[in-house]
Length: 397
Image 1: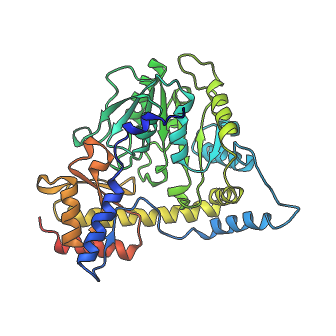
Image 2: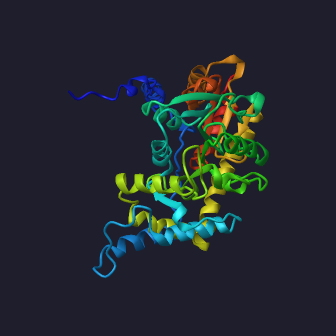
């Protein structure tokens, strides 16, 4: 008799975005003709840059000729792209071989799948609030999850686990709080992992938004991290590949845990990928190569700065009203303390009704997200400016 995986029943009802849509639709129906301005979106909005488009077009053109047509590629990714990424890290003072880099169709997939190579009895630590995929995928695989509380008292950077932990997820810059681990704080976690033979899964998908050169963009800038850390990365937010789908995961050969030898975890991830993944789109990978070119880097950095200017506009506008703002300096997300003790859903309704602006209630990112609200810098400049103007003129505080 076939049975469902009962662990799915342990997931919380993922009503956050459906509820946002429901409330927004109800407002629109009751207020026809009113323009709704969305600052809650975690999705890039600006067109792909010219160099990336040229790369994607090249990928398509290659498929049109017998001489250059390619079908299945290596599950680990196009060797040219892996070497380009190895060079990309090398320019940052980080030495990685191309066979330690695995190309994927996005960071979310790898973040969800990576713990499959670790024992089901593993204890997993995630910060609260944080991106939901870390929690849900570990619930599905029946691993024990503990929460590391992140509040304004610790600048939304969690303290070390108080109990022995096997796997630790770190998202830096963090979604949703927009905060970034310092080198000193990240070193504490690396030391903990080394002492306990634990693994850090470091999600650096927003690293290109870091403006402060003293903050780490990769965990491998921390001494000892190659022995205890896996890094997940993405072209989605740095190059606008949210719909193109392309990312990578670094699994160093020096990595070692309680019952493994050097190189074994790298081989396990390779085995997992060759079994369950046929490789990223060859068209997307041509786009990735273009994004890593000199012109591609210049153009994508300019686009990142466009979003960060949006963040500055939002931050300054809301601070002028006396609202307490976190993030938005080294990340595209702003984490707002709800005024007057409002819950995050109460503030959602207030913002929508008074200013016609839609954001994301913090409670959707975990228990510690209650009382906070996420706004995003992803958006067209004219809409961002209009939204901030509406908030400044109409929000009743």
